[in-house]
Length: 276
Image (cartoon, rainbow, N blue to C red; front, top):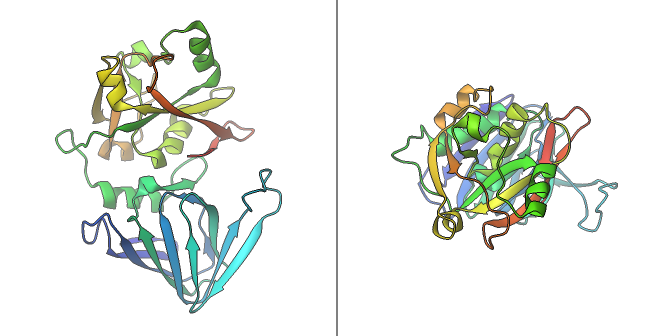
């Protein structure tokens, strides 16, 4: 169960309750007015309101400037479908609300991208702990898709020169490149390690198997380690991260499977990763 500032999530079926990734069902109660951050789901979710009122804030798909925010209100006895890939923000204007979310496939933190700004909320951290437990080298699973964030100018320069890309702290960090296999951790890491940087940033989606089989580059799944002179947050000590022992080839097909722009505010805080 996860509890935070009047919001309580009790999973009845799913990856935590029944060790089943097919479907998750939970009971959520909200006892005071509150809201969640903007969310983008990588699963279909049916939200069945049992009590009270929920608002779903969203933008139409053709509103690329996001200038006209829409609000859909659901009350007791009504069900709303949030389709995979939709971006929305749940708001509880009155509190005293209860609902049942049904997710296909089952909820996992990495399947729910939360735009939480400069740091992950206690909700996110508690969900991570419930779903990942205390990670170790022995039980870390290899992920085919991994992500690395970098300065756009450095990546573009490497591409133009047809050279491998290396981050500025590559040698200092131990001759490896930091990455993650869990998208929901990207903004937390970005704001912890890179907030003081200048300029545009991008997120590279990489193939573990192409790096290994086509390039001979080994990726080790290990505990979090410092980036330059900045040590990882204490909560990161429970997580496993992929470390890429080599540069990222810029012109070998299949290494980079996608590139996502990263959105920042005027103070440098990372707000979201567009498209991820």
